[in-house]
Amino acid sequence: MNTCLHLGIQGQPYNIWKADPNTRRYRNELLRYFQLLRMIPKGISQILDIGCGTGYMSVLLAKAGMKVIALDIRKENLACFEAMAKTYKIRQVHGDLFQMHFPPVDALLCQEVLEHIEDVEKALHKMKEFLRPGAWALFCVPYQENLDAKQVQCPQCGQWIHKNGHLHSFTESTFSALLKSTGYRIQQVQKIVNKRTVKWTTQFHIPIHHGVLWFDQIVNACFPHKSAYLAVLTQKPK
Image (cartoon, rainbow, N blue to C red; front, side, top):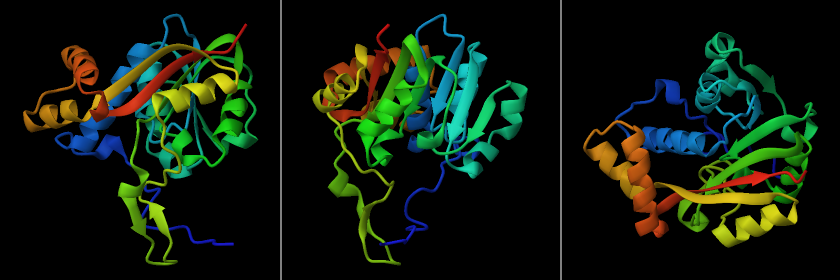
């Protein structure tokens, strides 16, 4: 069994709290967060943020009035927003998704997680256990990613791997079929964060505001092949 961790290649956390706001990466992240926030239905009291990373989205959810449970497998990610979590009463949980047990919640958010998990179907079934009947689940995955284009060779073991640890590429049809087969009812599908929007807002130093979110929707409709992410809002059957 290959036990190489591919250190220095994949899995390094991106800490948006300390990132340069004038970079494409920063604007890509921020634009995704705010587009997802718009898709979350009103009236949700408690939400589970699965794979919360360094917690920027968890804080946005808390600021929007939701009680947030922020789950991540990496302690260093949770440490990045420990103080903010206390301020906004976010419950931080360190652990593996497959080992977790939570009382049923109103909603869950899972962004930039499923592409890293070997058994996506098993993960979706596990997440559904956390939802009460009729609860919402918002998923976001990279859209039509060319995995081969991002392969790098690990200097430790020589294995060719995706530089960000991605194992799967999703189209709208394949991801929708996967969600349906695991018992989720699809309510809304959106392509979000167009690469052209990110390029232009970075180039001209345009802050991410409501106008940019609206503009991004138009650009994604015109140039769907340039969309970075696929966001799907689903419900657990009642």
